[in-house]
Amino acid sequence: MSIIINSILWGVDQDFSHTDARISNTLVGGGAPGTDNLDLDPLFVDPEQGDFRLRDGSPAIDAGTADGAAVVDLDGNERPLGGGVDMGAYEYVPR
Image (cartoon, rainbow, N blue to C red):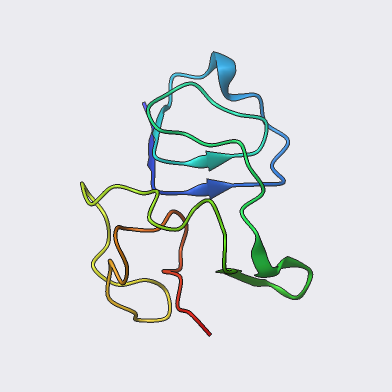
């Protein structure tokens, strides 16, 4: 069984309604069963250019869980930076 937590699965052509994966605190395009999952545009900065950082107003900001969260993001920023852990690979850093 796979465990998916604090992730963003957006633009993935996958039906998660019939999976044995445990998905929680994850933003999933098309939705997924589980705890505290979202089905909303993550508002990436520039996904076409490979920039998957979160823009201001992203629903993924502070929507993750500290349970099992990495202590730093892919840029080396400490987690959490705001009121809570962000979903996805990057903590939101106001610009």
